[in-house]
Image (cartoon, rainbow, N blue to C red; front, side):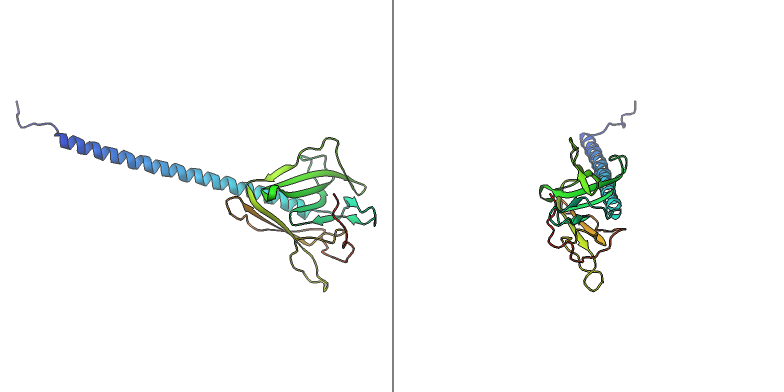
Length: 216
């Protein structure tokens, strides 16, 4: 029998155990970090996809706004074709069949709950009036978990040149040339700025819309 053969000492076993534990800890940390990176990437991708979907919807609907009246002032008989405020915007555009029956609908975009939600409501327009349904469906939530939403409008100045951005569109009988939408998420991140040109926008503020109170 060879008496020179010996087993591992206790110190060697403990050292091997420590090294194995350290290797396993490093492997788990790397796996956890990789998993967190993947989850973060998926969250960012979902957020970007959501932003693109909302901005695509807004761009299509606003750019296709039509010079169709949705309300009439009972005192002056002036027609409301576009009402724009900092937190609310109303105009008429054709609605896709998947959202309604098709045809011209009043689009009512509202920054609700202090700007934390962006809502869209729709109502059919007939003979220059928005037709309210007996059982209207609730507003569509386009975006939530927001900190602020702001609408701005741009038309022509008195010299016929492109004017400054305004928080209110007062020429309710005509459409602005451009609409700007600024959205800030609840975490403080700003969505990419959205500027939409209206195909039928004239941007003319000839004073006819002055003094018109926004319809209810």
